[in-house]
Length: 178
Length: 340
Image 1 (cartoon, each protein chain N blue to C red):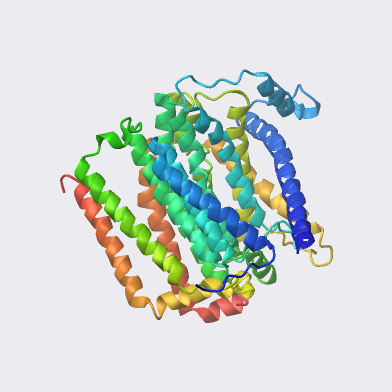
Image 2: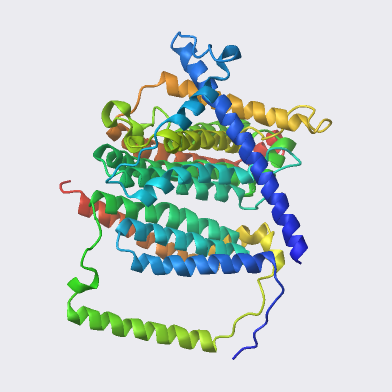
């Protein structure tokens, strides 16, 4: 077990706990709530709280992009689909699900929790908060940009081509006649 | 450690409250201005009976709204129906925090300032969507659906329209962008991409605030009042408040990005002049918003989507490419005329 330190009460630490608790609580609500719109909103809150965690680590750019892309665009589309299909929640809860899927989901869930638990127990966690200089460094965004266009150029381009393929695919599927 | 935390938080809270109260005061004034502008454009006088020049008209209206019955439809989702109006006010107020009002004052000087604004703008759609969905009526739902599609489409173009300016400035901090403009020229004057980007940004900002001619989510002629159909009293007025706060924030951001923020003549000698310049520029832009609202007819829904995706998006991408080509091919020209 790594040596645990308890640093003095500071703004980043308080914020960390606030965001962490909100993220976990809302993550739980996503799967507990029966109403799909409420679930989606809980997921939005989770994503915003995770963005807050990024902020406390000094990763301002990632935090902003997280909110813009996930909370602001993808989740809005989720809500759009829920509203369009007029989903009103599932009355049966778990009762309607067949036995086979239930067992499979349970087994996978246990496997995931064991895996994550062993990771938490064995991983070497960096002690203390991130480098305070990183908070106000205007180089934060520049560094990401430079890395993206030099070291990670190939994965970056491959991902953009993948997105383009998905885009074209959805157009082809949606458009009946050409 | 603890008392330092207290001081910092208290200072931030006081400054935040100050900005919020100033914004609320401005909204009262803006509603009156809107009605006056509308009146004069339509060859009427507008409000003039309550107080001098009708200035107290809005206060009378607010008192009336307080007195009205606050109705929640029995089939509505009570919690979300109550939360939605609150969500309408939070994003515009929060994104105002990064706008540098004056050389000595910005609530938060982030080095990702403009991304902060975009992030909260992208969250502002939830208020309308939830209002539409939770009201559980067909007009509200249609309004909510329209708002979702519209705001996603125009948000994209809005983000892209400011990219040439960010490329030109080389920073995401609004304060830095304003300072650079003060040393050289306003970004709107950087030919050829500055004025185009400004125009595109303004169009997107009007669409994002759901103002005419982009007010499809609440088109009275088809949807009664769209997402706000079931709302009354103070809950309804919160949407109104949110709209005006969003206009102010949008104009303040446009001022900082394109019109040199607090910059102007003699601002170095008399720093307080900066606030005057800033407020004057913001109000000039707000007047443009009102002017557009009362002179253009509303789009048809398919025209709105077509305009967003088939014109605005390619235009913003084109401006970005144009800016990139200009800056790389003619660096000498920009150095000579714009000092960079």
